[in-house]
Length: 282
Figure 1 (cartoon, one colour):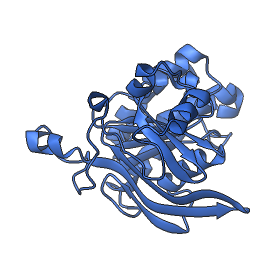
Figure 2: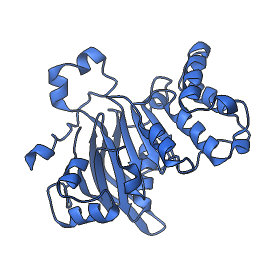
Figure 3: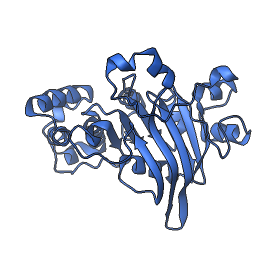
């Protein structure tokens, strides 16, 4: 079974911002730095304990599916990681940074977030939203133009780049939100039930985010729909990590990528389950 368990990512200061020459070195590969680290996160909302001393370490380059009971815990965790909600206790480190960095070369380029709602003003056109995202990331006019054009092509916004998103419906709004979140090429991408208005084939294409050093956390209530997009899964129960394993472990045990299969493995008490989470690096 040991062959199916990659080494635990180290909680070191090396991040995916490390220059390519250093990143390619054997010593750094052996360190397996963590892109996301949560230490003892706690938060109760309206009497419901969503985070209860949660510990989690996600290695650089991982594609992690996050599921939870209650369902709100996974979404809330991603909001905490994105800086949109606060934990009452604990520490979060994103790409080696322990607090939000508002500088142009800081937080906006380290992290991208897409929630269930697009979060794009209905009167804005996709081109305006992407240009604003580029400004927030500190890009000059020429660099913004280049990135907006590339995003418009990848997310197939060209014909609708200048119309208000309200005229294009939810699908246009969600494409625009995804394009805006990735325009700065963030190190960590947080996706909470993203792109549900798109057909499954197109959704899978857009969520297959490239980048060896980019780390993706995807919260979903429908694990089977994320098959092929993730290589790890973490189950949150009662505000703690009950299971954190590779998808290969599910496959080895002939368990489906579903809540039933994930919970069955956690209930079996395999390594990576229980109160002490096992973080799996890529």
